[in-house]
Image 1 (cartoon, helix red, strand yellow):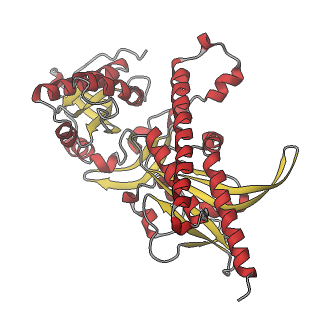
Image 2 (spheres, rainbow, N blue to C red):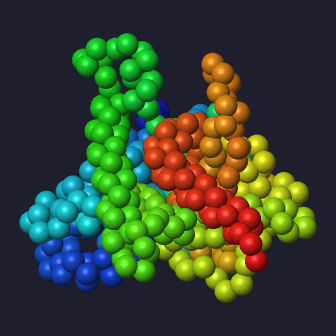
Length: 439
């Protein structure tokens, strides 16, 4: 528990936590919510935010229906606003369930899930005898509250200013990664830091521990349920590939043959549908890269993408340029994970291969590159692999892909990778036959 903070009138150092509902008006309009239902939904939000703040020594200072801010007087311990924000984020699924119940179950909890911009700051506030009259240096506080999207660029993520980060102890400070360089936001000048997500409990760890069912924690049980569901959807997606191939070879123009282009297309489309079905609140972009050996220097060429169409002209990156993550994945025949593209770019660890990647509207915020390969020879645990291409999967959520979970992703997507390897083999066989055929 957090120390009890005695309220006293006068200037005090505080942590400030601010939340704001993203697209609140559009949310309620889309669900055709009545005035009474909207009022109840806003009450649920206020209660959750207030409870999370009170649990860690804070109190709501101002509320506007779909958001507000709270003050956390600084005692001997810093970081209470961060603890409250983490608690709030962890309970968003509960809020969605409550919202769906309020709306008479005419919408699902997934549809009733609201998104929030969340940020925290450190500053000086004048506490009045009446809590409703508390105020701070108007210019800095107003700037912190006003610049919602600039200081909290992603929803359901916690961002803090450098002023607050400087107050944190080592363990808490290490949770935050620099997201933006220092810049002015009205009268407030600050760098921006984002709280990194931590790897989830994995079914593998549960099984390896040899624990009995009664020893499994709630978070582990929740993961097991979601993992079982995702595996069912994985099988469904891979079955859709078979259905798609049957449709392709049934086309008279195909002459009963499976083409490399057809197999690649149905595979990445099925992979996209699988990801969207399992992770409803996130967007994805998929691309396949193939080596082009006859070019000088040797290059990787983007041969397919989904859901966006291939841009006009060829998209090439040199296999000698290790700045690009798909090149590193190809040359090493091993996965490459970029947890947060924006932060990697800021630290000089990411290079955009074209202008579209640098555009925030592209939705590229976390990236995974998986080698497409075939095993030429295996002796015991040693396997000689031939890299045939690279599968790129991008997500709009920072930390969606994490290095600690890359083996889980590799296992989940192994069937899709096998299909893509087969497509590349078909391509190479066709290319060889074409080269050997008499002119």
